[in-house]
Length: 609
Image 1 (spheres, one colour):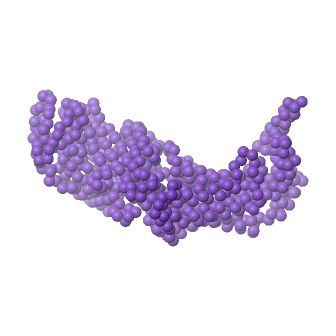
Image 2 (cartoon, one colour; image 1 turned 90 degrees about the vertical axis):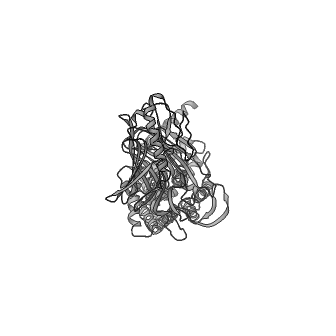
Image 3 (tube, one colour; image 1 turned 30 degrees about the vertical axis):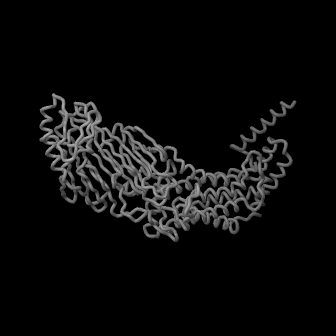
């Protein structure tokens, strides 16, 4: 089960799709610790470079900490010259600093960012890792200030880096990183050893990890819509923090926490679900800025388990692509961090569109794969298009008679509605017959709307003038920013908007549309809808705009084929006239509606007397 918080950007897209379907419905409706340096929170101990640390201790701990002081001094003097350690496999290059045991660089070796620079999720101090714990004398110690002694080893292709911060002989804190010959997973273990006499186990040790997510795409606004903190909890639930502004939560039984940076993710996976932790996020980017470096700030604070007075936990890091099949291959439900949509929308993406597009793109250029998948989807939906168009024809044939009824009973709304329903019944026409097919298309439209922006396969794949189908297809840089539009002109959204305009023209025909009291002017909506589409999709993935362009072209083509080669208007008109002679008995909703209107009419007459 997936729980999804409000997403304004997807909501806008959903509204656009709903407007298209509303138009389709409208045209079919009836006319009507101790270490060399630390940053204590309660007792401050300052350490200057190349000087032994000064440590203030309670008398009860004086003996053990005299040994600790000697151990610290020796460890500190040794590790001042320790070099940054490197772990590397086929997919990752990771650097770890002895200062704090902190990962200072994570490079995805086979990928580059939008500037064709090496893609690095961690670099230049954007990620801070720290373990805080409390001593019995009330000091709060931070491992980010400790100096660790590194030891690198390799066995059976697996590299292991052990980092120990010695407190005294046989007393230390250890971090262990390990990676296989390939894959994006990094094993990580935290363990204290022999320091239980120094620890206040009543105060939890806290692992804190904070990251400023680097910008990796041309449009920071678009990337920001799919950059968010996600976490899995309980057995199968997913939740998200806010996409905009600041947000914080304290979920329980957490299985993993993902810092998703659109097409790349940094995920922390505890060995066992954590009873409760804290996650937070903050938006760092200005939507209109062209030179922003970061998109979001993510943070997680996890309490570490105590056992026999010592603390420690085992984790895994995932540093890699936000690719559905890649994440699924690790069998940890990490693929659920990708926003493929809730309910039937996610089902369609997972079991139909992802496999279909994966198959097509395995042997076709990605742009051609989009076009072919669009053709397959439209052909699969052609029976719906056919029924919708037939309903339009029937309503068009009945329109003159409905207009006559409107004039005849213009002062009696109940009688007008009764006669209209009677006409539908005699003609064998159902005004809902055009609505239902249109509604059936909504899950497909919205599923594909959520599919293309997160399809990793499109990243840096070109087609025609679009050099990256996962980003916008700029044909003109304006040099200035237009609110809600951007600083460039994308061609595929223009083509898609034109196609939508002609489609709406076809569905309404050349006849004037009656304006009913209280109803919006549908002609204005007809022109407004393509314009909104143009503005909204200018910064969206060109692959999505390509899909909508081709989809609307195919819909127009199918409607022309149906109109000119399949449907005979005269035959439909003759069939309606024949049905009028042998009207079907009204049943179901129509019968109940007609009965209700008759009762309302009787009550009205009774009140008139």
